[in-house]
Image 1 (cartoon, rainbow, N blue to C red):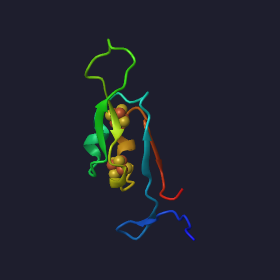
Image 2 (image 1 turned 90 degrees about the horizontal axis):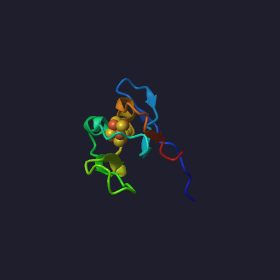
Image 3 (image 1 turned 30 degrees about the vertical axis):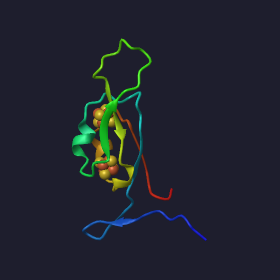
Image 4 (image 1 turned 60 degrees about the horizontal axis):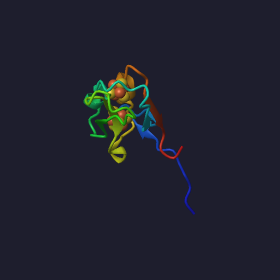
Amino acid sequence: MQTETTLVGVTRGGKTWIPQFVQAIDRERCIGCGRCYKICGREVLNLVERETESEDEEAENMVMAVVNPDNCIGCEACAKVCPKKCYTHAPLGA
Ligand code: SF4
Ligand code: SF4
């Protein structure tokens, strides 16, 4: 029988912490500034073309996406630098 448990980490100083893994990016809020991409050291994120209904929209209209979710270590640096509060995070097993 499989039971779900929350992953608990430990700091260098021995304090416990619970990694908060990236769940989603709010595409309506994202302005494609790239700050989160630059701060993430795990290659989880990348800019992709925003899907638009209008063909008149600018071609360079980009939005951030979670492209490698399995690489995330749950550090929350992306959320900390995001000026538009696009991110949702959750512990593993929650
Ligand atoms: S939580 Fe950390 S590892 Fe995960 S996407 Fe954000 S910056 Fe990258
Ligand atoms: S920091 Fe926020 S607004 Fe900027 S690209 Fe990342 S998710 Fe979008």
